[in-house]
Amino acid sequence: METKMLNVLMIDDHPSMIEGYKSILSFNDLDCEINVTPAYNCESAYYLIADNQNLSAYDVVFIDLSLPAFPEQKIYSGHDLARLVRNYMPTTKIIILTSHVEAFLLYKIHREIEPEGFLVKSDFSAQELLTAFNQIMNGDKYKSRTVQQNINELMANEFLLDEYYQQIITLLAQGIKTKNMPEHINITLSAIDKRKAHIKEFFNIEKGSDEDIIKEAKKRGLI
Image (cartoon, rainbow, N blue to C red; front, side):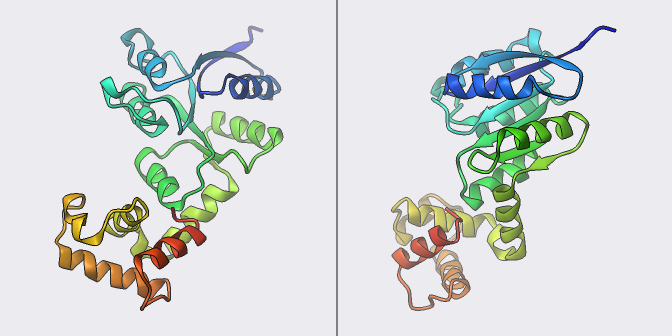
């Protein structure tokens, strides 16, 4: 009986990581041979994804979030590439592998992309990656421990799911002053002030400064 071929696109700027993933997947229990196409930056990945000949070329795409950008096509990260995959290859399974652990970012990708697999690199062993891959190719979804915990944390504190709260905390962390935030967020300064007061109340730092908000958000793994 002929062995089934699985075509996998792996996007990571560390060739050694791709070699490691290839080696792990060779032990899959799907009776499949894995044919891997590597891409090491957003530009090479863009052309592999957007090439009209490749619309159903890949069964699964592994995407790292932090990658050298391709500004000419407004592709700045693995997040942008994942959107592209969803556009061009709607039946292709997406597995996000990332070193990022910030809850806001993980939740945003979970909500916008709904990847079939979502794993934080520090979470998983070779065996867990293999288990995840086998489950995903059999039609299930898989989230590693940190992804699941951080998404659960945000969903338990429902107001933090509001995009404006997330943007305010993220902008503060980037050093943007409150008075300048209306240039970045489509709400008024008074609405921003009200949300900041709510954030401080939630963090139990009612009399705290912007620095206290940032410190507390980092402590909770939000940014």
